[in-house]
Image: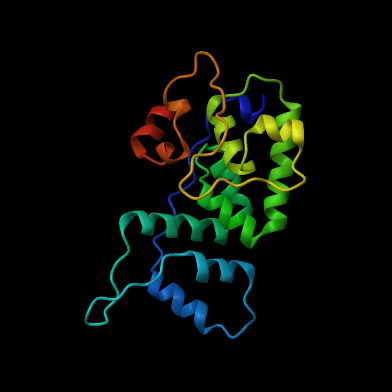
Length: 193
């Protein structure tokens, strides 16, 4: 039985806390030409804010969580992205990080997911369709009919993705939770019971 027809897998370990100030010191101290991962971290992570005395301010809880998750997926792009996908917890920011910093790994994950999608008979679990829509950046049905090639229309930031995966009949509420909901400990515990 494919992962597309099962409940979500257990969540991967929580990402470690990343100190933004220390990370930026390490990234700017390296004289080597910047890798795509380094470029991503330097340009798309929150900017270090200073108070009026020049001391660094802590990130908001949301920015810190995003930095921790993005850093974790860049540190282990293949394994962590796959684990998040199978747990139904893959977020758009993690997909953005992997597709920018490791396009060949992202392409491999897309091909694997497409293979799983076309070799597994529907109906699929609602959570699986949702996470595939996050990975492909468009509804899975559009991927199957249109393939992965060609330009992909990305939603504008803050705009909900176009198309909505259909829920399977009899799916419980926790299986239909969004990837962000499944990061919540209580929702994961309900899913694992």
